[in-house]
Amino acid sequence: MAATEENESKLLRKVKENPFVPVGMAGFFGIVAYRLMKMKNRGDIKMSVHLIHMRVAAQGFVVGALTAGVLYSMYTDYIVKPKEQKAVASSEH
Image (cartoon, rainbow, N blue to C red; front, side, top):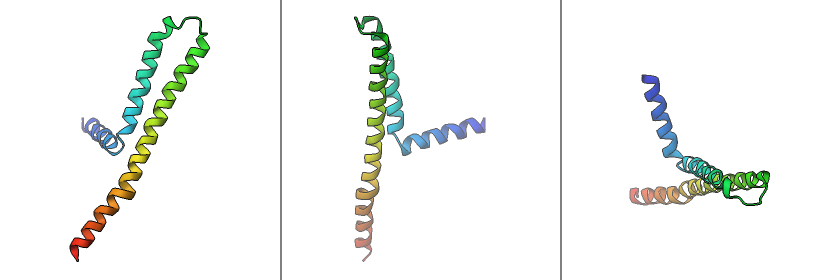
């Protein structure tokens, strides 16, 4: 029981630290589900081409979400935190 609670708290902590990973995963599964539902209406497109398009769309979303996460992390580490440290340093003097 304690191990399950520990794993849940660890998962929640990881999600709070990097919220773009679950967004990327949800987008990936959403795109795959949507494209699988549309598979029967693909027209005269070959199955392999349809699957390649699905893979590229899903991977593109994940890469975009991870890139947004990295940019957000860099913003908070290099722009927000130095301003806060500067404000604290100036208020101490």
